[in-house]
Image (cartoon, rainbow, N blue to C red; front, side, top):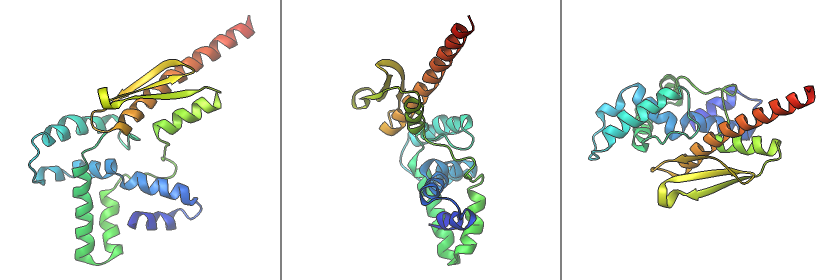
Amino acid sequence: MLITLKQFFDYPDLSPGMLTKLSAANVDTEKLARVAIKYNLHNYLRHKRPLLKGQVREEFKEAILEYPLHSLGLIDPPKVLADLVESLIGAIHSDSNCLDTTWQVVKNLLQPLITPEKLEVNQVTKLYELCQKNGLKIKFVDHWEKTGEVEVFVDGKFVGKGKSCGKKITAKNRAAHNAYEQVVQNLSVEVDRLCDETQS
């Protein structure tokens, strides 16, 4: 609520839909988990999950290096890290009993904040928009229950797949990301071929 209220006043001309997307990007599980890593809060987490340390160190910390601001669903962050940061924010508000004081702390924790200029669409939406613009039919084939994978076919041709043992939506986002890169490459080859033919 705090970030939504702040962004409502900072960006009065944004549509409600854009404000919702902007707010979500700044306080979703990935963003809050990044805060926990940035400030080493995960080192103080008491838990009985032996795999969590490896998941945080090897998977999540390495993955966020590839996507400095946000992965748009390509990373499956440990939810416990986001819960830790939410609890911290709740404790700050409970102690201060003041939204302004809470915001002064939270805005520093959440840096860098995602602004409307830096807000990107997720991988699946990006792929659908590209295919629609170019008159291509897209189909996602879900094998997640069996293999943890989702495949993407465009105009009946396999163009990418994604895998995630943690969440189906992460596998779908990874598949869309792979497919997007392949479709863009195929379209640029086709455009180059058509240009060569017209120049001949």
